[in-house]
Image 1: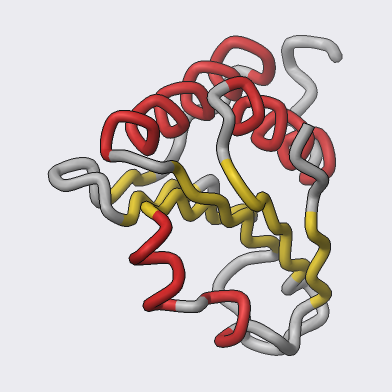
Image 2: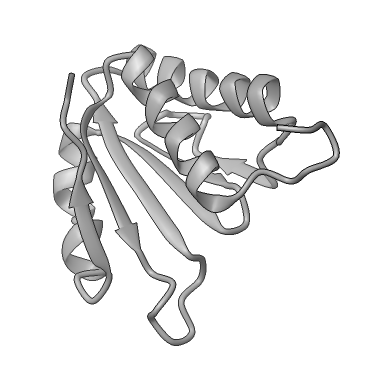
Length: 123
């Protein structure tokens, strides 16, 4: 990729998934929202970690990989204070990193069931 060429959504999606896998994020799901009218972004990527520490590590991994490999920074990151649910806003992609209990409680996969959901294999 040339330095001036912006990363496409598929490239960003792949980089995010790689970063989550590097820190052993669990049950990675992507939800394509691009065909949903008035959706807040084109894609959700959802995963969870087993502890506050793992949620932080996953978040840092995603930040670093997108900065290093694509020159991108998150527009906004929220939830780092308690790391129960961290939201990373990359404009066209929102990354949700949960602790398992909070993921189950909020059940975003069900809330956005109109989108095209793909479960990514845990390696």
